[in-house]
Image 1: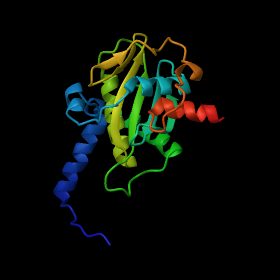
Image 2 (image 1 turned 180 degrees about the vertical axis):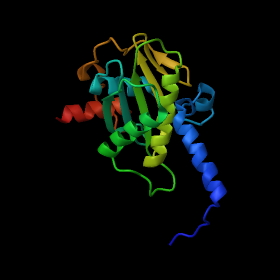
Image 3 (image 1 turned 90 degrees about the vertical axis):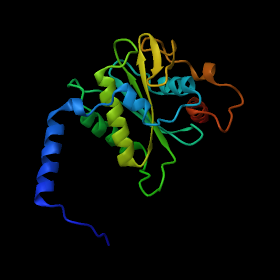
Length: 210
C-alpha cells in the first residue's frame, strides 16, 4: 500500500504549466557538455574495444544509433541499432526510441536498489566530433531512458568520418570511422579470449560459437 499527499490545485496547475512549457521547447531536453561531465558518467576501461565491437556487429552508417547494455565487466549483454528519423533533434523523442529498443532486447532492472548494468550509446553522424545540439538531445534521451529502465547511464560516443569520440572524456581514435569497413572478427580476436573481456571480446566469443 502506498501513502502520499494529494497536491494542491495551485501546485498541479503550476506543474502542468511547467510540463507544457517544456514539451513545447525541445531545447530544454538536451544536456550541455558541462552538464554531462558533471553527471558522473562512468568511464569505459577500453572504449576502442567497445566501439570496435559495436561497429563490427551493427555496421552503422550516418544517422544510425546503436544502444548497448554492458555488465560490470564491460561484457556486452544486449544491443540494438536503429535509424534516426528525419525530424528536429528532441531528447524526448530520442528517449522514447532508446527505451523502446532497450525494452525489446533486455529486461529492466527497476527492482534493484542500484543499477548493475550500464547502457552506452554510439551514434554515427555527419560532421566533426565537436558537440552539437543533436548530441545534447541524445545525451538527455540516454540518461532518461536509463532511469526508466533501471540502468546506469554510460558513455555517449559519436562516430563520424574523422573517427570516434567519447564526448565529455576527450578520448577518441581514427578507426573505426563512419567510412571504414568493420574489422573482421578474425582480426580483432586475441586468442584465447579472456573471460572478463570487454564488449568486443563478448561479440567475438558469440560469433565464434555460431
